[in-house]
Length: 381
Image 1 (cartoon, rainbow, N blue to C red):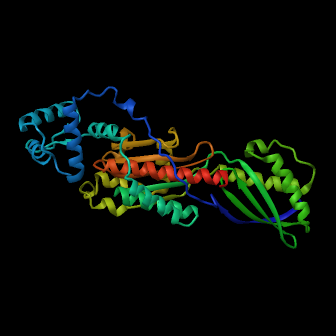
Image 2: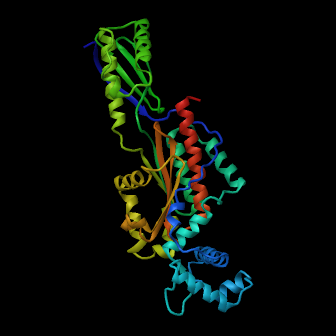
């Protein structure tokens, strides 16, 4: 063996981070869910949207009298009651008590989200403020992830979760070999996804910088764009140093490929503890236990975004029959990054009565910013 020993020095992803503007994507994945739902008249649609908006703001059942007086609707209370009864029959509303007003059902929320999904946008002033915050932050992955979680929580008043980007398919970009002192050499390995690994190698004997640079040049030409699997079948010149460096590169790339997901960042837990839905130990409050189990949270993010496109937005209402602990909550989630290279996920959890019109565009906008960040790191800009 030419290399006597080596010591990992630093292992960190996306060492350089910059911000550029980005166009946000609009997902159309929701449309198919509503093809079989009852068709609403324009009047029914207007009333349903008003009821849901009012309930989101007040957390109180909405009656016909409030609608007529508060929104100055040019309809009699009797007509409004009839339309509310029809919406209840169609499954969009329910009546908690005989004498109470109506509240939205899961289907009602889904209709509400489908109607405003593509039209909800953050005000330009808010977009500018968020962009400025990212621009002013330190160019480090941890800073960007922490800031994204903080912004999502403050804008949505929910609990935010951000999974740092991880390499989907580790591909070699280049290696540098730098003589330091005596037999020690610094090896800097850079992946196409932006991840960087630094190691101190202790060689069996001192090697001139010229020879180290020659080895790096040959390997860079041979390995550019290769995965670990493809590299394992390659043959290098019968030089002990070339062979040992290739072996170390393979070990690092296999380790990076095995990483299932990035680190999880959360914020805003106190935002929802004061909401009436979370006042009981059971019910929605059980959903908060997910944030105490990083592995469970990573699994949830992975499952909900595995089949979605980067930039696509998903809204899980009531757990969608798959997540029992979320059956009284909603989760707005998006995938960001560069497909096939490096991606992560981010989202906001809140009561089913969350402010979708603010949360959806915030998640979409921040996902766009982080996608831009990942793209810039991969391109080296």
